[in-house]
Length: 250
Image 1 (cartoon, rainbow, N blue to C red):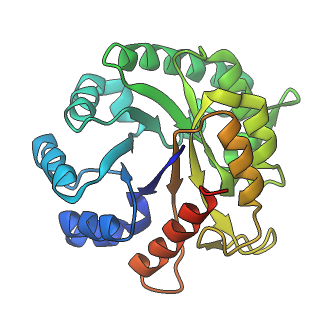
Image 2 (tube, rainbow, N blue to C red):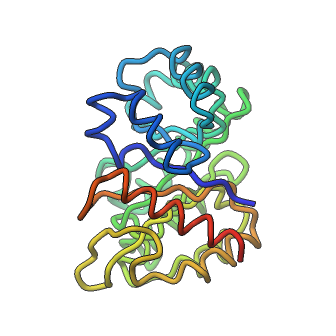
């Protein structure tokens, strides 16, 4: 059964104001874990203690490519101390994805990173946006990345919103990559034209079908990410958590 998490980038302003207070509210909203997008100058010991206090689990961390290339040992050490099972690259600069050869080089780099994190029993993955769905030599960049990266070293965190913003379907990609998709960003849109990010289950996307496919391949976390709000952020994320809890019963 997947667990329900929140990507903390969703509430980055609240985290900047009071990081630990925000974690308390995330727990109150019904989440089982959080995916980090920065630690707001807190030590790993402080974060680990706070997670335990509020009953949340670390559901991974988004770490930029610069840190992954230049400070990987520190990144691994921090993740290990907060008992986070995943390190995820959340996106890439143009030079890492502007050609088929660039994707091949990036895949080789990712394989090395993933092999290193695996030594600490931490899985390494990549989170897509829409830019990786540009084609090179007839192949999507995202496919090239995962074709050349070692499947044992690099998993996929599939972002449903950004994939479907291109007209593709999350279900198809789940069937294509199967167990290699460990994490899902459950992210809804109001409609395929406006592409406004809305609470999970309130928009146009077929999360019932996504859930059925994800169950078949043992996806580990359903992680909510929301970047646009028409109401208080904490009320919004609670709506998404409530919907996902009901979805998990199906």
